[in-house]
Length: 104
Length: 208
Image (cartoon, rainbow over all chains, first blue to last red; front, side):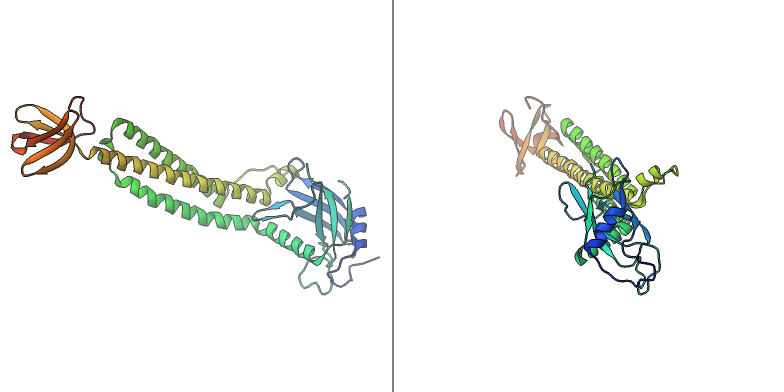
């Protein structure tokens, strides 16, 4: 499939999201009173392994309102592979959404 | 670890939002510390400036307050000092943090992450601001009590007559050698030549 030689490109697709939903896993940290939701898996475009920490709250900024029962998290590839044209940006440029239940 | 509920394409706006959130998350502790440092200096300056006005009133002035007013003044002043000290400590805690010994377990490190510390600092700073407001309010109340109680005393005078008698009441006027007092028993006109002494008093004795 894809490899690390892919040039940096900020693209998204339904397939990225569906493949990531199939392959990624997530956990809330800390489990009792979560500050973050942590995703781990392989980027659906470049196949680089990545960990993506999405803060549920940040000081001075709040995460956009989400549906009552679900949280839609925009995920950006944060793999550590080299991608031509990245110009200092981490990852291959691919991005997609993942949906997780809101922490209790 | 759990599988997500689903996934799909994201929009460029969502990508930008993600970048903004990640950047804010990375910088939040530094930003909060910097803001708290400036707040801490501002709160200290504000409290100090107002406290000077409180100290201008000397102990003698306060000692002259009637009993109940003196107690109220003392309580307000004690609250002002207590709120100011608590607010200052919390503002410093927010600005400078507190070294903490942590086990190297992932759970401890996660619990005391920079993100968590930024949120605690922001919350403590808000408490510090409110404590400073309460401190200033208490100090203003103390000053108000001191001024109001003192003004109440200003016209009460106790006069001693050469004959040995005493009169006490509110000063109406002093003109042409005649002192006019409003006493509980009516208006009194006294010749200054007949007086042995005059003194201010917090409250006239009964029947004065």
